[in-house]
Length: 425
Ligand code: GTP
Ligand code: MG
Image (cartoon, rainbow, N blue to C red; front, side):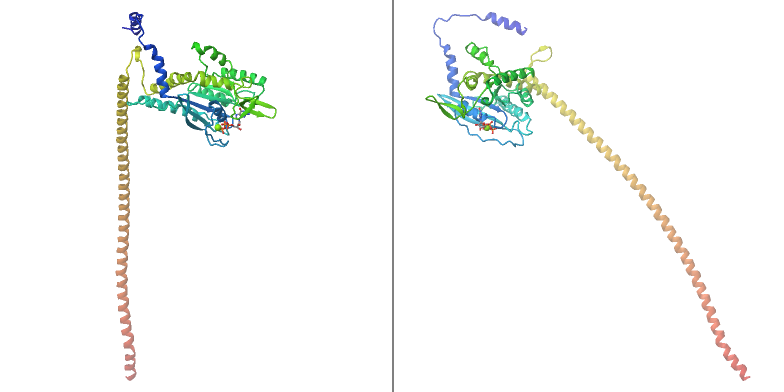
C-alpha cells in the first residue's frame, strides 16, 4: 500500500474521545519544564567583529557580570577561535554559557572567515559523532554547537565592508546571525537610521539570510514582528554605573552627557537582550538543531553514501545502505588490490628486462675486452719472438767478431818472433 493511503487510513481510524474525568496527562508540559530545569541548559554565543569593537563589554553588559577576558592584540598571525564556558544560575535555572571569540578577525591580513566556518562545523561534527555512537550519552553531552552569531558591525555610517558581507554569507547557512551595530553612541541618530537601512538593503541585495525572530507563535508574534523591523540593533555596552536622578544605571559618561545602556531612546541594548535572552533563546537553540545541524547532518550522511530512498522512491533502510556501501567498498578494494598486483608484475617484468639488457651489454663488453686482450697478447708474443731472433743473431755476430779478434791477436803476437828470427839469419 502506498504511504499516503496508509496515512489517510490511520487518520480515519483515529477518533476523538471525551474523557469521563481528570486523567492527569495535562501535567505533561509541567513535567517537561521540571525535567529541563533540573537538566540545565546550554547556550553558545559566537562573537565576530574586529578587535576592540566592544565584544567583551557587550557580553558583560548582557549577562550583568564580568567574564574573564583578555584584550587581543592587533597583530595576530591568523584568526583563532577562543571558547570560554561559564556556569550561570538565575533562580533555579542553570545555564552553561559558552562565549566564543573570533580573535584577530578583520585585523591586518586576517580577512579569512574559514577558521570560523571550520569551528562551527567541528561542533556539528562532534555532535554527529556522539549521535552515531552505539553508546550515546546525549543527555549529559556538553553541546557546543553555536546557537547564535552576534556579528559586530563597525559604526562607520557608510556601508558594510565587503569582508562583513562575505563572512555573513559564508555563515548564514550554518548559524543564526544577529547583526548588531557596535558602539552606537559614536553615530548620530539620523545617520544611524540611514545606516540601518543601508545595511539591511545590502544584506538583502547580497542574499545574506540573517536570523528572523519567529512570528509563528502567537504569544511572541507581535513583539518579534516589531523587533524584526528594528534590525540591526544599535547597541552600547558598559558595566560602569552612573547616578541618574537617584538611581544607579549602567551608562557611558562623556563630557557632554551620559549614554544610558538600558534607555531605549539611547540605544537598542534592551531590545537585543529581550530578543536574545528573554524571548527567543529557545528558538535559537531549536533553529540550530532543526535547521543548521540538520543541514550539516544531511550533507554529511549523503557524503557517506546514505540515502532515505532508492530509485523509484522506494524507501531504503540504513542496513541496506550499509551493506551496499560495504560491497562497493570491498569491490573497490579488490580492484585497487588487482591494480597494485598488476603494477607490481609489470614493474618486475620491466626490471627483469632492464637487467637482461644490462647483462647482454656487459657480456658484449667482456667479449670485446677479451678480443682486445688476445690481440695485445699476440702482438707482444710477436715482438718477443722478433727480439729473441734479434738476440740470437746478435749473439752469433758477437761470437764471430770475438773469433776474428782472437785470430787477429794471434797473428799480431807471432809477427815479432819471425822478425827476430829473420834478423838472426
Ligand atoms: P578584543 O577582545 O580585544 O578584540 O576587544 P573587544 O571587542 O572585546 O572590545 P572590548 O569590549 O574590550 O572594548 C574595547 C574598548 O571599547 C574599551 O575601551 C571599551 O570601553 C570600549 N567600548 C566597549 N563598548 C563600547 C561602546 O558601546 N561604545 C563606546 N564608545 N566604547 C565602547
Ligand atoms: Mg574581548
